[in-house]
Length: 615
Image (cartoon, rainbow, N blue to C red; front, side, top):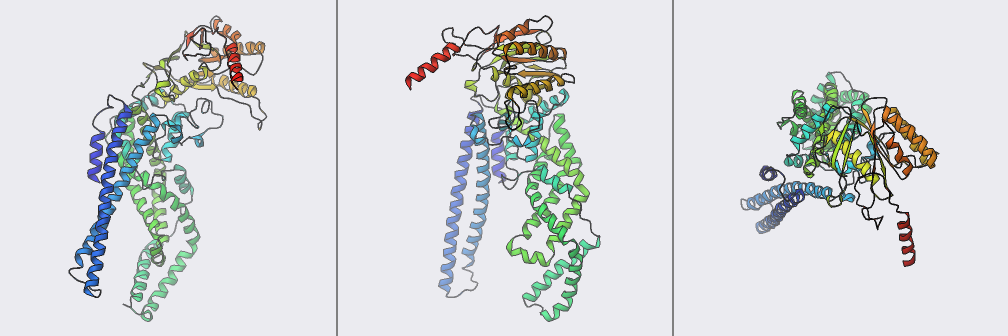
């Protein structure tokens, strides 16, 4: 296994992404791994053939001898059986690991090709009530940014990744994340190793499971109890075994055994209910522990230069995180073993369950506060590694320059991160103190909503420490606020217009606090008539500008374009429309200066008429 790991790591570390692209690199790695997998499967089959031949030879030896007894000749096929079993187990383990590595690259190809059905993780369980952009920008949900980014190995890492995408941070933290991601993005072998953590892929480090255990009151018993059980348990077990093998008679053993069992029952009975309760919790915690322990060990074995990663390693090493969690994992291993059928009775005689629970409680009494910190630092590393994977898979993205200026948003050649490369149309977006907002006009299907989401999603990516789909980007700190995908709610008794009005009020309140608001509003006040919309829009835009906000408002109503010409508001009119004067539905999805003057109504009517005639 060490040879296989070294072979794959050396190949993975052979340099930066090949010139023919990340997809070609993944395909080459997958082909190499499939070749190695075929080799291991052939060797595994050869071990099975050797096993069958050795069994036949052993049976033939017994038949030839005429009776079962030890024979020097029988030792040869017996040795063959043991060797073949050992070889088969080794090849099986290697095959599983190579298969997991193949899965790692297959999932990478799914992300590169935007094969959304294969990206099942939506992140909706991390949604925040009343959040101002999580669903508008498709940060969470099906075919979302989270679904594309989430390659974390642990539940704790997935939760931290969601925090990165949803929670505001200052620019110093963003710069620290950027430095960490830059360092991690060129370590594909490290991501492979993280993908192989744990015993099973469906098990991960779930912080909530650990938290449930931590919140349970520690089971405290006198110090003499575990000492007595550590002595009495093996004595009882050895005595029973000696009696069953007739090494000692029951008559001689019972006077010695019964008093110990009686004292054992007096000691264990008062805590039996609590022990059973904690055993149920520990079974769940045990499933989550392997990833945490192996992940912390992997983290401690690496040297990093970026301050954020160095801090994580130093915190883990100084507290002995991997060592102490390994001790806990041994207790969990014992709990798993005692529940196997052939060990259940001996463990009962030795009071193994009670002893293991008490051992886990002693560990928790000493380290439960640190356990939360260890899960936190692993979650941080896991989330950063996932973002680094996205950075490596998208070499055409760029890390934005972060500036402390009050209002700067410069995103040249901006593209939507979720669109395939061959379908992504790019536009220049720039907002600053002299160009505070855009009124974006244009008909349906022209790409206005996609542009708004592209701006917001790239800003969210930037604050998470990831590169964005733009070139030479410059960005200051903003609080992202959107009103894009709102709808009416029959259950809440709320119309779309009311939902939009409430969202706009929330955005206005945000302008009273730091940082500055970046607003992205689609179909501005579409639920009311043109006259009322014009009056309300002027008031809202004036308040947004007075509060120091900047952003983009899209609309079909051309009367709203006059707002951009208000003196001192620093607005601009932009549009998205067809590039073909003879075909108003032939959109190029690019932002152009000015007001949209082309109507698509006649083209839509003609399209509907032609389809009706065909039917």
